[in-house]
Image 1 (cartoon, helix red, strand yellow):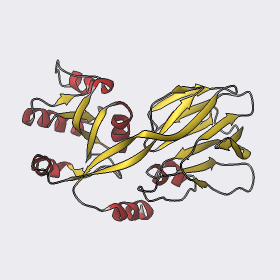
Image 2 (cartoon, one colour; image 1 turned 30 degrees about the vertical axis):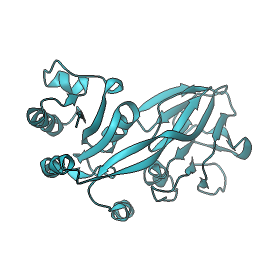
Image 3 (tube, rainbow, N blue to C red; image 1 turned 90 degrees about the vertical axis):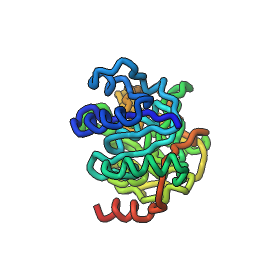
Image 4 (cartoon, rainbow, N blue to C red; image 1 turned 180 degrees about the vertical axis):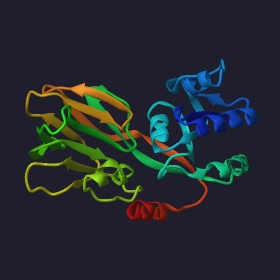
Length: 264
């Protein structure tokens, strides 16, 4: 079993746990930023990390970054606040690694979305792709198409296209519904639209196209990890990716995760 390690570099407790993991699993591949902090000479970039299992030490943001750029199944160790995508707490790590070596786990697959900007493929998203104004409190005009048919035109602060996994994140904060993660579809949620408007569209698998209808700058944000500046001539297209996010799981507790989201 080949392990990789990705961690939040801004938290000392995350760095300390990575150091301990590396001592117990000397062959584990460490992401280059963390390796530099630990004075290791064998760090690799996320793009070059291709392992069986990636141990992420941090919160959901750490997981999303790993899923966006590295290759491997995710074992999420919660060192953040909510940790919706994580599977275990830090004190459970060693028992969890033993269970993995014994084959006592299962793999949960979740849909990702493919994001194209002017025909060029960007990183896939596990949660959402967001187009929003580059200036605070400045509305923009958007045209939204589904399978080349106009869905709606409106003015708003932006638009969220979320996976079922992402329906519990930014889209939920903007008033969108929660979808069970095993549903394959997308949620389109406008950000502060300037008219009476259905809070969200829930769509089946297909291609969503976003066009900007005015000559003002916008930002395209991928899973909160990557930001690209876009303008009125640019076209964003989003559809189901052929790739899936894969998570190491020990229990089937999805409804408990969803309840935790609802109850805060």
